[in-house]
Image 1 (spheres, rainbow, N blue to C red):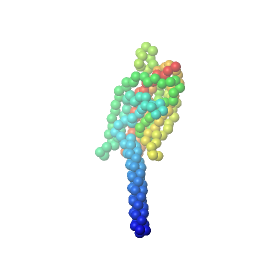
Image 2 (cartoon, rainbow, N blue to C red):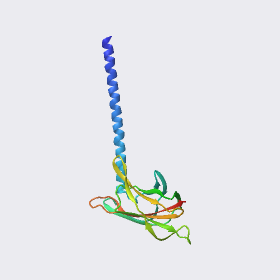
Image 3 (cartoon, rainbow, N blue to C red):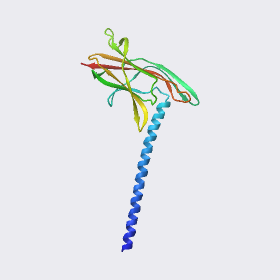
Image 4 (cartoon, rainbow, N blue to C red):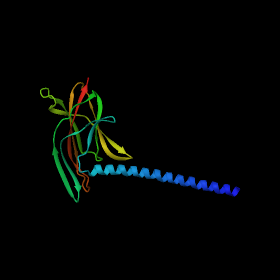
Length: 198
């Protein structure tokens, strides 16, 4: 009897060890898969043949996609550099936010732009729906967007402080060419439109 119970307990122990190892392997596989996805996203953003996607946000909420104003983008493919120039220039309809709101533009490219600015224009009183004047450059601060310790993008923070006015925003970003690499580079200017409440 004691021999049989010892055999059974050893058999159960082996099964438990097998399940434990299986769990460890599965968890490790999931961790490695998520790291691979993040690395692939960062790699795709670094070498993309498309302009970097930029989105206007408040906290975790997306308010508005950037509307292309103009851009000049370069990427490496099939052993050569390629490029595209595009311009369009519309202004989207206004999104209403509270005066004093802290907003940010999310840039989905791991490389920080060499130059980035946001210029705010007022609405033309005679031509509602269009900006007027030279505009004013807003104060901005940058913060990395990270996933699993890797930079996958940038947040550019700013504020809109004046109540009851239209903010026609024009962003301008320039990514410099990185010598010795095939990282995509170029310039991109986008339009956003906000209306502050009182």
